[in-house]
Each structure stands twice: as structure tokens, then as C-alpha cells.
Image (tube, rainbow, N blue to C red):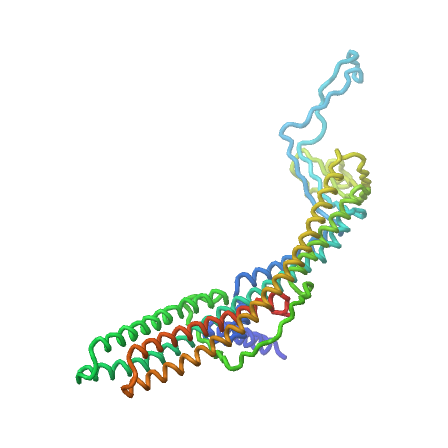
Length: 453
């Protein structure tokens, strides 16, 4: 493939990738799963968790690098405006005993260039840092999973809030249409002198009440959609269409176990990883009394000039030469007495580890309680849903009968209004219990750690 064709192919791929990203950014129609997937790419909280994971990886590499040899290069240049003065005994030059003669040694300019290296070959803090880096990576990964569960739960609840609100509006509009017909018929009957005006006014009051309820529900939709977009990480002013429908016929009850495997919960895994960090710190403090060993070395050249002529070199002229300086060494550090600092740090680490174990035990108790509560709430929500569904069906039947009797002239508008009010109440209770059941199911799945894999 020629270079021109290769560049053209790369350009085409870049354009396609840019268009795909732009289409995703401008997407306005979402199923529930698509809304969750969108949130995984745009939710600030989830994106921060992924950035923390990347940061943990760089931190791991940083710790690994601390155990490698450290090499530095340096160039040091000095211009002695006043050359340092040294005092030498005057006796050397025939002076009186105890006298000193000030003498200036050196040159105006001095330059030293070289490299130095050091390596900690025995250091307990480093070795425990290597062990801790894996635990630190696990912490970041678990935090990503926990953030994902939070996003799935929040987006799902917000999505169903919009769907249920729209279903309730449909039910209210059906009731309004039915009552509107009865209201119009009543106005005609009143004009013909068949019924009193108060009967028409009662229907008008009920009709206005239903319209008010419908308007309130309609006004709540933008708020619910804005909250959904917030959970998704979507621009609030971006239009959004939900493609999933609320299929109430497919909602089945699922027996939920009250026995929870707490080890599947992200927060439990998070605390276990944190506890491993605490235990490692205790071990690190225990071996902190061990000696540390480091080796080092340097290789340098030094030049001294009375004029700034460091680029001039003549091996036969001492004033134009660079002199070599090299050395190696080792440092063995033996902690003998540190004012009991390490002992006290060890005790603090032990206390922190003990508190961590207590926190894990408390989480295990709390997780079981949370799972039991979520399971009971789900069961109660489903039973309530069944009762409210039955009540809604009965209220619909009563409203239909009351409407037919009123149209036939054998029923009163009072019966019709009472039936319509009961129907609206039953519908409101039904959709409220439906949402409660969905939320309870999500809370249970989150409580047992199975909401996301």
C-alpha cells in the first residue's frame, strides 16, 4: 500500500469515528438499555470512577519505578566574584607560631558535569508498596463496579418514572374523554329542561378537576425527563424520546431469597480490599525496624578557569584540562532508637485494622438486614400492586356502569362523579404501587450485588 493510500485510509477511519461519536452525542431516542449504555459513557460520576482506575494504574507504575535505579545528570557552574579565602599557619612561611596568613585558592570559574546513580536494594517500605499496589488496583476496579450499579439503578428508576407518568396521563385522558361526553350531554339536557343546572355544574367541577390532574401530570413529564437526562449525563436541553413501553401485562412476581451472599456486594469487596491495605500496613510497620541498604555512585569531570573558556581543551596545559572524579558507595541504615515513633505507628496501624474488621462485620449485618428489607418491600409492593390492579378494574367497571346508567337516564350525576373520582384514585394508586414494585426489585438486586456483573 502506497503512503498516499495509507494516509487516505487513516483519514477515512478518523472521519467515520468522528461521525459515529457525533451521532452518539446527538442521539435522542433511547431504550432503557441504551439509556444505561449512554450513561456509562457520559455520567460524570461513572467517568470519574474510570479515571480513578487509570490513575491507580499510573500510581502502580510509579511505585514499581521507585525500586529501579535512579540516574541523574547534572552540570554545576560557579562564578566566584570573590574567591574563597583560607587561613594557613604562618609558621610555614616563617611567621610567628600561632599566626595565620590569608590565602586565596582556586580560580574564578569552576564547572562540574557528570552523572550519579542510586539504588535502594533493601527497603521494607518499597517491598510492601509493591504488595499494596495490587490491592490498590482492586480498590479502583471495585469502585468502578459500584459506580456502575449506582448508574444502572438511578437511570432505571428515572426511566420508569417517565414511562409510568405517561401511562397515567393516558388513563386521565381516557377519563376526561368519557366525562366530557357526559358533560356535553348534560348541557344539552339542561337546555331542554330535562335536568337542573346544578347537575351540570357538578359534572363541570369534576371535569375541571380531571383536567387539572392531567395538566399537573403533563407538567411533571419535563421534570422527570430532565432528571433522567441528568442521571444519563445528557444535556438538559437535549430532546429525548423513550422507545421502551411500559408493559404491565408482563410484570411477574419473582420469589426472592432472604439469604444474601454479602461477598457479591461491591461495597463488601471494597471494604475487604481496604482491610487488606490495613493488614499490609501493620506488617510494614512491624518490619520497619529492619535495616535498609542503598548503593550509589557518581562519575564527574571538573574544570577550573580564570576565564570563561571551558570549551577550550589542551591535554598539555593544566589550566585547560577537565579532571575526572568518580566514586561508589553504600549506605546501611540501622534504626536503633527513633523516640518510639515506629512503635506508636505500629499500634495506630493495628487499631485502624481492628476498626476495619469491625466495619466489615457491621456491613455483613447491615447487608443481611438490607436484603431482607428489600425482599419484604418487593413482596409487599407486588401484593399491593395486585390489589390496586383489582381495585382499578373494579373502579373502571363501576365507572362504565355509572356512565351507561346516566346516559340511559336511570342514574344520577352524583353516582357518576363518585365513580369517576374512585376510578382516578384507583388508577393513581395502581401506578404508584407499580413504581414501588419496580424500585423494590432494583433495590433488592443492588442489595445482593446482582444488579450488574
